[in-house]
Image (tube, rainbow, N blue to C red):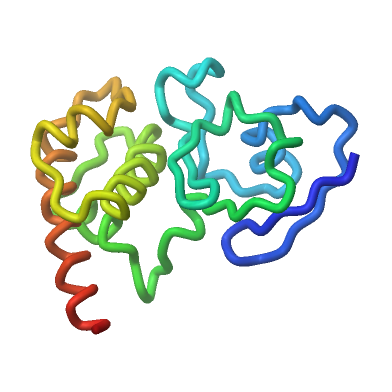
Length: 160
């Protein structure tokens, strides 16, 4: 089965035997983009979060057959070294990661939240960012999310 989609602004096609193969494994094992992590395999922890058509999706439970024609963004496509995304800037500023394994999923979930809600409250964050961090860096993440919102708002004003 041939599946075509755009990933990180580049057109991509894969020929996959089983259309029910999780998108996560296609991204990691076929496309060799290793930023999206495997956590639980049950869409519970959020380590595998990426964007599909702008929505935060847990790729470990998203069948590749549903990716046909979609726009996919992984952590590798969120920003660049020269121009990091506001979420990446805030994560660095607040030294959020401890082990760092789950952080790409958190950053992708946060970027999706900020696209929908540019000024989230703590309650909005609690309701929408439900990924799991075994290291417990939640306090730093909350600060970073608020900082990312401020950076994003400032960037949006400059763009106008």
